[in-house]
Image (cartoon, rainbow, N blue to C red):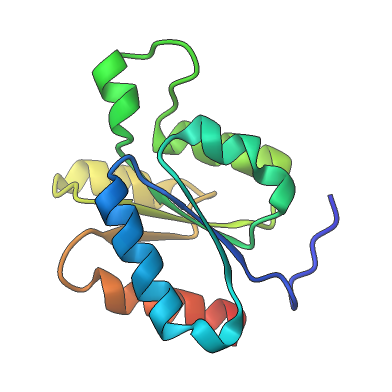
Length: 140
């Protein structure tokens, strides 16, 4: 798959919480409205994977996708870490940022050690600033 780093402004937001997704989209659009970003929101890993042909430059991915945990691995339900492997199989150059409200030190360290994870962001009061820094570094 061809990947045009310099001009690609496609960003995927993947989180099962629709209100959180809309808040992220609004925050990013407000800050970068002059950059003509192409932002797509998905509430499941499968939705995201079905749209990988849009060649996202960046994916902000929730570690805990509720559909996975509520359905206990029913068909087509993926965790954030499983998603990373599938994403990288389609496009190795896509930046993947894992977001989580996880506070367990061992889990956070395990996520951070996954080589395909470009960055881990804690869903706390500083996440907006950190997302802003990541996006600015990618598109500016």
